[in-house]
Image (cartoon, rainbow, N blue to C red):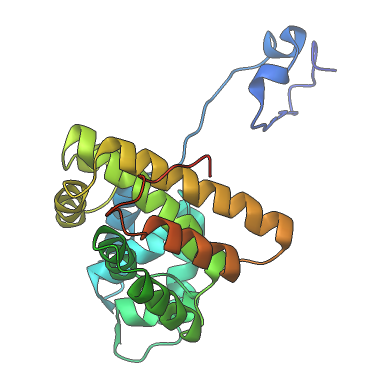
Length: 231
C-alpha cells in the first residue's frame, strides 16, 4: 500500500524516534522535522492575539503562559483562552500564577539567594511559603533544576537570551546571580537537585527530599568541605 497508494490517500506518520523507522519506510516518505517553539516566539504570537482581540494582558503573564506550555503553541493559546474567560478587566502575572499553580520566577531567585547566603532556615521558610500558597512541590523542584541550568548558561555565555530563552531582563538577573557561584558549585547544586528529584520519585514524596536538598545546598562552608554531589 505504501509503494503504490491510491491518489486520494495521504499517509502521515508521526514519531519522536525517527531513528527506529526502518529504511524501507523512510525511503518512501518525505521527512519533516518539527521542534518546540521558543518562549519568546510564543509570547510574540500571544501578543498578536491579545492585541487583535483588544484584551488587556501583562507581558509577564504571557511569558508565564508561554513557559508553562513547554514549547507547544496550541497549548499556550488554549491556556490564554481559558484564563481570559475568568478575568473581567486585566490578566496579570498574579492571576496566571494563581490559576495555573505556577512557581514565580521571583521565588526561584529568592531561594537561590538564600543558598548563596548559606541561610538554610530562610530557604526552608520560602519553600514552606510556596507550599502554603498551593504550589506544586514537584514543579518547584523542576523549576529550580532549570534555574541552575540557566545560571550555568549565563555563567558561560553571558546574558544570551537565545540560549536561555527568557526575556533579556531576566537573563541579566541570572548573569548577576551566577557571579556568586563557581561553575563547580553550579554543577554540584544541579547534581544535588537532580538526585533529589530521583529520590522523590522513589519515595513518592516531594517535600522532605527537597527540604534535605535545600539544607545541603545552603550548608555553611566555613570549616566544612564544599558541596559534594556524591554524598
